[in-house]
Length: 155
Image 1 (cartoon, helix red, strand yellow):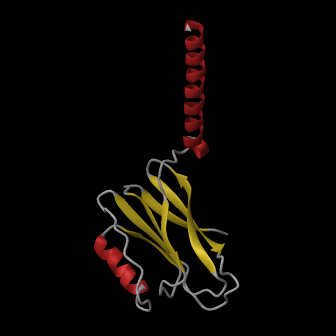
Image 2 (cartoon, helix red, strand yellow):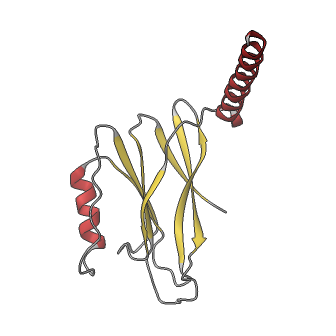
Image 3 (tube, rainbow, N blue to C red):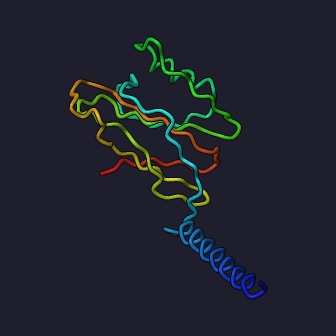
């Protein structure tokens, strides 16, 4: 039994080291730590925005105001997500008027200790055959950060 316990310990230790090594390699990819949880909460085809814009929302008042804008023509409207703004913040990207059925998406391009670069792009929607004029938006939740948030448009 002692021999089996030693082999089990060696296998366990090997797996532990291998998994931790993989975590470190992923975190250091690109020379920056990528630790931000970035979660899509809502994506829809109408924001009411007349121009392409991306914004950071850090208060309940601003979030309620944004949802009042997008819910003007909806009955019932989209529910306002419950966000703890002491721990989290919201990033919203609106693509402006479009007629190709695409939705805006954000991805973390690069993250350092002082800055987060977000890449804004368009993704074809499942309803791409619909060719009506829309103004789509996507709303993301992430942990509150003091980092400077920089937005870049995909080429």
